[in-house]
Image (cartoon, rainbow, N blue to C red; front, top):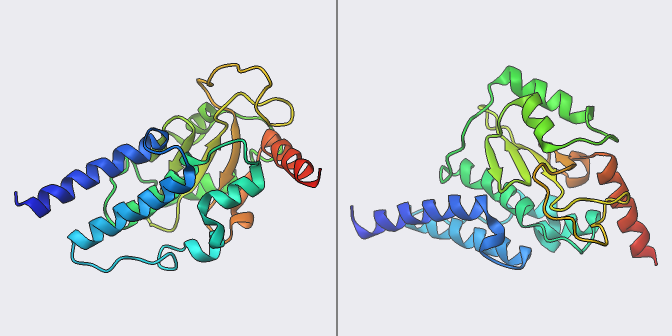
Amino acid sequence: MDKAAAMRTRLIEQVTQMLRRPGLYVINDQDFESMCKLRLDDLRFLDGLPEPTRDDLGLSDKYRSCGIPGLFREAFGTDTRFHSEVASLFAEIFHGYGYLTVDRLLPDEPWSALLAAADSAFNGRDAHLSEIVKAFGPPSFRIHKYVYCYAPESGTGWAFFDGFGYTPDDHGAPATTFRGYPSDPVLRSIRLPGPDFEESLRLTRQGEALRHHTQLERLN
């Protein structure tokens, strides 16, 4: 194996590792977005292909100039870092370019059933990520234990189930007293395929509570 091929293999291995445990690599979620883009550019360079722009990746229209973490902070506050959400989007991107292997791809029928259920079944009620696995089977790709990604065989866009990285209080915010990291995170939100962040977002009861709490804090 020549050095370029060895470097490519090494980068792909690193990409998989950093997407699974993004918080181990950088402190700031915005920095993690930059790191992912640089790794993608490196792999494209090694393949002799042009570096994709934010427009090419579908990020400019959906996440605007505030970057991926920006819209999550607008929705859910600034007390949480959104490494896992950034990682989930780049997992879809890296897979689309052939640089990430997932654990499973959903055929058309179970994928359609997942989209139909995810569109409304968890709206306004409490759920845990373990319920998602019971309903739809194991995820295509898991970001640590907080975000479960499901990918279709058709390549039409992924669905993401986002868990709280903490045990939320009645407002969806972190409890005043630290209760430890949850072994089975509470589901906060679902992101369905689509060009617009708001239109693709579905909220559970505690996800709605957190968003309302965030909006009230912004007004104060």
